[in-house]
Amino acid sequence: METVRHSEHTLKTALISENPRLVSQYEKLDAGERRLLNEAFKPDHDLFGPITLHSQSDWIISHPEAPQDFEQFFSDPYRKAPSPDKRSIYIQCIGSLGNTRIISEEYIKWLKGYCEAFFYGLTVKLLEPVPVSATRCSFRVNDNTQNLQIHAGHILKFLKKKKPEDAFCIVGITMIDLYPRDSWNFVFGQASLTDGVGIFSFARYGSDFYSSRYEGRVSKLQKGSSSDYAVFDNYYTPQVTSVLLLRSCKTLTHEIGHIFGLRHCQWLACLMQGSNHLEEADRRPLNLCPICLRKLQCAIGFNIRERYKALVRWIEDESDSPGVSTKRGREGTVDLPKPVDAFKEWKEWIIKCLAVVQK
Ligand SMILES: [Zn+2]
Ligand SMILES: [Zn+2]
Image (tube, rainbow, N blue to C red; front, side, top):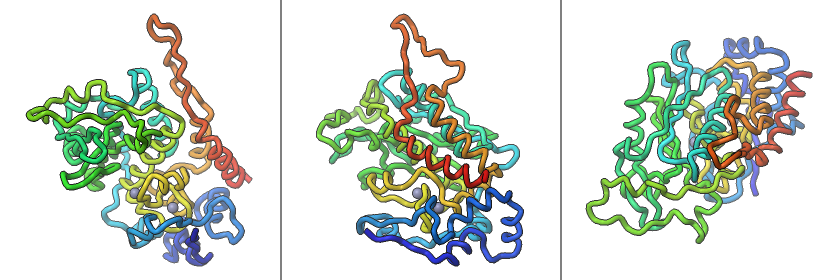
């Protein structure tokens, strides 16, 4: 295993910059916030570790990209930031997320709550879920994995048309696998940063996708049935586990981070690191490193302490559906607590950060 180590000077410049205007902007931040952000370059810091490389197929090795420091982010002329009349993130669910309507509804509310805490200060709104047929997208059965896949570009077109006036961005989420073009095997997601539109699939995040037990395989589509969306009725969705929720929260915030103009992070272990495969995505933390955190704070204008507190509240509030009764229909009580086990370790980490901010 290799470690990507930067000098104290490099990290400090990436965070604060040497541009006098940005230095003075940094100095105006609250002392507690600066204490936390400075952990990026403190020699014996333990809150923000280095990026580790585990194999040649890891992102940084296989996709060399120019790094983006705070100053480059700040002065990027193409970067989109929320404006006073465009401060909402819209989430559009496509097809079912869970086996039952209740699971789908709860799951999407958990994601909404998470994004609201993560992008603290913006409003996250859910659009009424739509079936795949509503998007009129092309679809196919993947020759290798034999699962149903929908065309990512067609979904983006559909979402762009639906984007409300007050939207900073609109993101589609689906449990159906995506493909970007006929010659490609699959894609986890696709976005248009200029349009503020993205589509992300969690199909491969279930515990069974890569196993022989996977139940999402279907036989080849019959001739002429390539426009019959009935194949999506009751199509397989993976069980919503804590790990699936964690992976979905991670993907959604990473991808929305790109819409804010954050590029892949090469500074420290960070949510914004690129990932080439699931194992690498799992290794990537849920949190932003100080450099990416300053970028997001600059775009949204949140208080770092309040944002961390909101994230802790989201983890602690296992129901997360205020006003929604868990009693449903005649079957009696359906108790569906938010599966937050996988987030517990992260919560301890946020509490340590809060202690630094509040010292
Ligand atoms: Zn990315
Ligand atoms: Zn970062």
